[in-house]
View 1 (cartoon, one colour):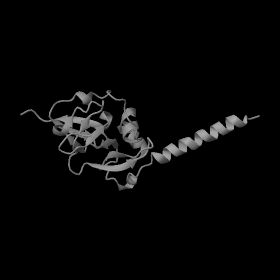
View 2: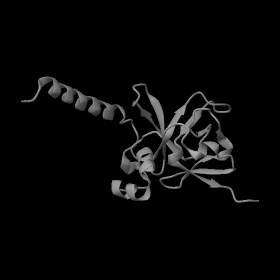
View 3: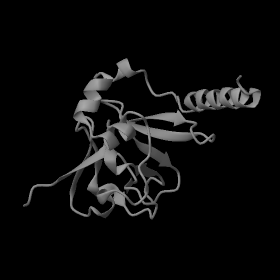
View 4: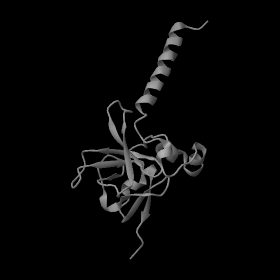
Amino acid sequence: MIDRRLLLAGAAGLAGIAGLRWLNSGDVEAADAFEIQKSDSEWRSVLTKAQYEVLRLRRTEPPGSSPLNDEKRKGTFVCAGCDLPVFSSETKYDSKTGWPSFYRPLPNAIGTATDHLLLLPRTEVHCRRCGGHLGHVFEDGPPPTGLRYCMNGLALKFIPDAPA
C-alpha cells in the first residue's frame, strides 16, 4: 500500500522540478538560431563534463575555482565551445566575486537573455555563435561601462598574445 503523504510529497517534488525548469527556460534564442549546430552527443564529445554542464546546461562553477581568475597576461578569452573571441584581457578586472569578470565584451561576441533561475530576473550571457552559457551581466561594474560580466572560467579559454 502506498502512503498518501509519500505520494503527495513525490508529486510536489515533481511539480517543483518542472517549475524550476520553466523558470530557468529564459528567452535564449532557439537552438536553430545559432551559427554552430551540434547534437547533444556531439557537444558531450567535444567538451569536458564540467564544460558541458556550464555551457550547455547553464550551470555555474564554484566561485574561486577557475585558474582564469589569476590570468594577468595580455590576450583574448574565447568561448570554450566554439573558440569565438568574446573578451579582451584589457577589459578584465578583479571583481572580488570569485569569477573572471570583464567590463565589456568584444563586438558581436555575445547574446543575452533573461534568466529566472533564482526567482529574480538576471541577464544571462551566451556566445552569439554557439549559444553556450558564459555567465551573467550585472550593473555594478567599473567605469567606463558600469557593467560586470561575471563569467564562468569553464566557459572560456585564454589565448595569450604572441610575444613581441
